[in-house]
Length: 314
Image (tube, rainbow, N blue to C red):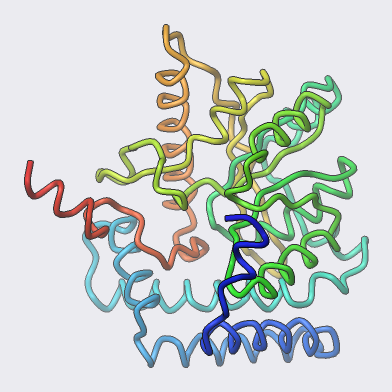
């Protein structure tokens, strides 16, 4: 969808309300002390849990796959903790544009793998970072722009267009180059950035376009986008999974080992194998920090109506 196409669709009342809510959140959060904002986020998480909306129930179902055999009470407790972490992400996102450089860097800790990322960036190869929806990826992006002089990423095109524009402006204020998902030149622009020796960061645990690679994820079939692996193969830039989580008032990150291309005659087979290994790295990170995984949408094929029917017919 082009920008003109998106503007041709009049926003619904719900979309207008969402846009207004985010506008208020970004505006008001700049003037609220962090401790008060954190308490407000906790209250909002409690309200979400009591309402038991669709997104909360889906989060619970997703976490059930991650946790395996646990009691209903244990699953409820983890889900409530995950909601609090999810609202903490938004609280920090609303306040992040007002953070000083010192605060961004002092509250972000890379506990593993920084040397390999620094070495690749120093070598001028460019680096393809792929992240799940964990912790605070915007904080990670802000830290990376300061350390490496910027990064390029892709944003899902939201409705109404004004809400999408707010997210683009927000991430650009943190120093990121933002490209809209679905634009015709996404791949070429990202490949060009990698060949220039720059950093590209993509959230890669949701198949937003419905054209992803089928992977085994926590023992069930799911799909994940092929973009990170394809860009790595196309440009030669190393593919590094990254996970982030909240701990002790900071955002912590792990840069996982590089996913190397496998030997195969077809590029598509290489991309599929690398995407599976990316899913495996995500699974390890999510299992280690399940309350920091903010997946409130349907992900596994069994949860998707068309996929579920196809599986049942086989």
